[in-house]
Image (cartoon, rainbow, N blue to C red; front, top):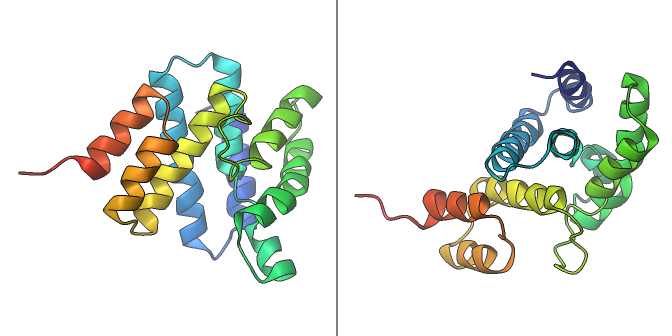
Length: 170
């Protein structure tokens, strides 16, 4: 694993200390994002920034709970970027453009409008988060089918949602 990624993970673990559900959530989203990006042949730098964003995508949740008594997605999109910026600046070695891309992804990870999805990294982050949330939230078959139709665009993401949720076992 890339040393910077392990530092980002540790920073997120420190912030989410005592909250195993949130730590496991971001690690699962990171893992799916990495897998999808690999299968979709995303170039190294955007794939790396995608993983950073996947680790930090919900980093503002505790701030949202304190400030709004809610974990609603639009609050996460507001509160997460300043915390993520602080983490990335403290770790160092990120360019301004890299930080801005990660913050953009965090500030839009609950925005599913296809016209706003401006890159494969954004699409993959949404798909990875959906895969984890559908499972963790015990989504209905109808909700899963709706997500498959309206959200998933990558071949790998489509294959994953179909294999995980829509395949009939013997």
